Image (cartoon, rainbow, N blue to C red; front, side):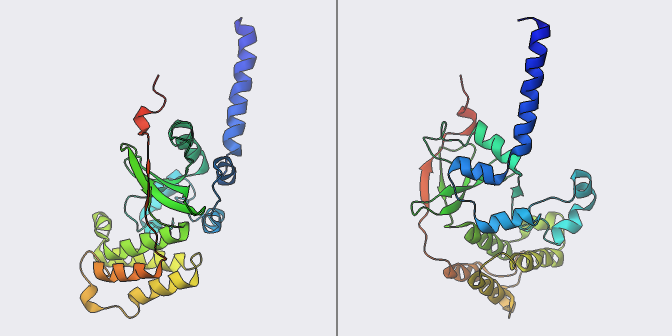
Length: 246
């Protein structure tokens, strides 16, 4: 094919790719995966609560203030970075799609620093559960029964251990970061989970306090009692590096 005929085809291809990326939304990804999009997650997206500032420059200049003000939500959590629909689509296409993963579908919404993916997945009961899919292991698990339970669990775990925040903040600031996230989450979590979070800090038990925690592990375990019993559902995973081989 001559260059004169090839150029328009390449231009059309690029335009189609750009259009596809712009059209990518979590709603379309959820529909494609056949995984119901949790209303709480949809509201967080609509309210901008998974964004890192107005843009990259804004985040770089003001990340500390944003983090302490619970922007994005779960800014207190260990090793969690929200991703947008475009990034989620790339992870699905390159790794977590049924073609690579024995027919199992995933909807990534966050990643760890190592590239592991926090995903929505369909549980045995047909609901949208959440688990971490490890990029270099041959199995993972659905760990919480719903997205709301995932948010609640992340907040309780942060209250029980905020040592990861101490690289950048004082203990007092770390506590305020966790509290800010609890307050921000109140608009999105059901009443029973909000009541359980309130009980952790009002009144707060002095013996639970430490330099790296607001509550003890025992108090955290007791808080998880508000959640309905859920047995982790393990499943096989094809590691990312094995996908697209050949």
